[in-house]
Amino acid sequence: MTGTVIVTLGRLPKGLDICRSFAAMGWRVVVAEPHARHLCGASTSVSRSVRMPAPAEGKRAYLRLLAEAVRKHGADLVVPVSEEAMHVAFLPTWLPKTPVLAMAPEVMLALHHKGRFIEVARDAGVAVPDTFMLGSDQAAAMARECRVVVKPAHSAAGRGVRVVAPGKLLPAPDGETVVQRFLPGAEYSSCTLARDGRVIGTTIYRGVQFAGSVACAFERVDHEQAEAWIARVVETLRWTGFISFDLREDADGRIHGIECNPRTTSGLHFFETADIAPAILGDRDTLRHRQARRLQQFWSCLTETQLSAFRLERAALGHLKNLLRTRDVTWAARDPLPLLTMPYTAWPIMRDAARKRVPFGEVATLDVGWFEGEVRDAPTATAEAPGTAASRTSAAT
Image 1 (cartoon, rainbow, N blue to C red):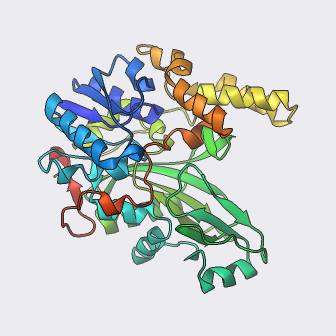
Image 2 (cartoon, rainbow, N blue to C red):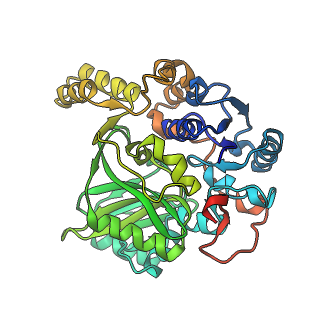
């Protein structure tokens, strides 16, 4: 089976993995991206790039032009990559016959919301930390007794997250914000591809080097308890597509889910690239892991290594060793330009990060993320039962 796939973001390395995988199967790959130049555009796996308006500038315009791109290029499948997945989930209301690798919007949004996700996870019977809305009596009482994490309900990449010591005053309510019990154990991230509630492949990983709050070097780990936690949620939701979680251990080593990203994360890089498209299409029942247990985003790690050296930090030597010994997530000998040209293709993001004085990862998806007020003027979601996909790939139906 071959056809045309539209990948809805081209600036991030995980999108490149998806593009390369579909191209290797003989599919024509079109990338829909708000930036004029982007990482995937430098790849031989991409046939064409389509300039899109950013969802933050108007979601209706974004969906309308995405629908036009699907019609114009005869797309057989649409695959979202990152934060734009929340918007792409509404595409079946415009094009009900076009398969989209996303669940129904109401399901996606429930998991994306850091308070509602806790309720969904509890209903699935898995462990989660106490979480309450900022301004509630429960949140105030918990903050008096223990360390808590305060974070916007729709934040991503660590934006706006604060840790508050026991007894300290909580910030004043400002929009939808949650207060969550802080867990003292190790933290992990994940990336899972599932079909009809069955896990096709899961990666559990942790950051080993960070740019701000976002990891730029990662290590894959084995964690059976975390994998079982994920499998339970996936089965309960009858999930199809990508889904990712941030998980943390309590003082006794018991795993809890603290956040959900109903999309891919950097954990995608640990899967064999050749397996990704076949697994999406239903031609593979398992996703193999790469042999490499450590991967990095070279340019981000280079920047952080230079900064730590200039600041005479003790971590500088370790960063340098990681930089020299760790494989880059985008490197492919047959397709070298994405890595080599990244300083040029990623310049708009680098410029905005410098202007705002925040790390690259925290601004990379600002224009495509979900924002307050979206539901009020978004297209009405098609009426489907919770846990059903808004539109599945034909091979996964």
